[in-house]
Image (tube, rainbow, N blue to C red):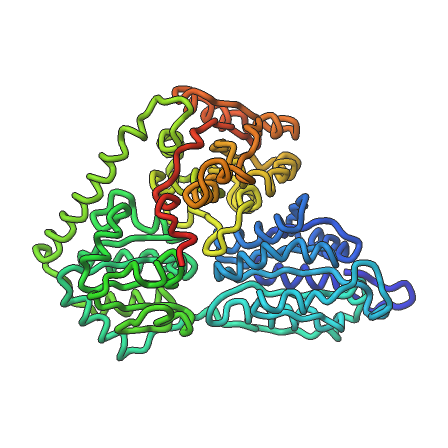
Length: 559
């Protein structure tokens, strides 16, 4: 709080009001890059005890805010400079938009008194951000900062969640107002959950209770809505196989009799009833074609617009995943164990065959190292409490099929926008939010190049983590497509990289690094990286002529 020199009236600045509003939301850290336009927010955050993680690029600040929300359930906040600071953040905001992440980005802006005069870095930030946010505005009065921030947070969580943007002109930010004139928003948003239509829930319960071969696909909204316990209760009562994608991964214990991963295609082809919760029918679902054509489909989503999008459904329920699961658990009839046992045993057999098919590759001693051997070593290295971040193409895709999670909320990937470069920013957020947890990033060498310099941020803020770079010296997903279309010579154009020693780059920034070329050396290197207590990078040279099944099917680019 500031006090003017010529009066005893208590005053408060715009930046202090911003920090106070952030604290009211439970925000304990912001991700930012220093700027004259926004420096008063730093001043306010110091007053409120909010940690400032200053990054090297505004894109990283936005990505980190995205991850903070996903991990904690509390909105993340990025504070960026005007002009290029805001435009640098656009990719991070767009990623959060597609991932349905409620977060706040605050942009600096030239002084309001200099509007249309050509002040430093001034531009139409709101016009840029409006298409990729749920709410975007400029605050034009210092006293209304808490009020409009309350509006922004309310919009972020209403219906389909998503990012919001505010810019604050420098003179509004630095301006001081009398405390009694500040517009207090009070309780500005509900923490309540949206329950499903009771009639539709009853219809869905009857369909599930009578199914012979039901299946559930749990998407990211299951974790966003913190519906893990409710999912387990419902699926357990039904004896129903559950497949998790996105941030729902880890929602069920890996040894749960209803937890499945590798038999999804078989389950969806043969199921008579499929319930999809919080996962859109986008390219990852073959635009709905991944679901068997004869199956009855129940879809649950926070956003009514997603219901029946790209594929006809039988029952569509708008609602919070946790709330709808609890309604269904109360309404379904417990299925006799004998009815579900043969279905579960069949799918378990499919899973076992898939694992057995891959075992020789997971245990391969080939050099260059097979990416599946790297994935196995990473999986064996992880603790039950490790937060895993996947940032890359083929290497990350192959690892995702091998890595077993022990807990919900411990898997992060970019989501449907497929943005590369989220690895380090997500890790910064994870280690800031949960300093006692291990954090492991699975990088492709291409993706490392986007925000790898954030190792400098991790070193400065003492945020140790282990990054594993599966280095195949190529953009392999695209390379495969080009080779299959145009032949190897043209396929290698624009898709080959140098076998760069990323470990040495990290060492140069003050971290720990090792280079691995032999399979037997992977695990010891990982252990030494963890023991270093530093931000660490293990650079593993892998075979660049190995492609993931997803890449070989070319599903990402089919039309």
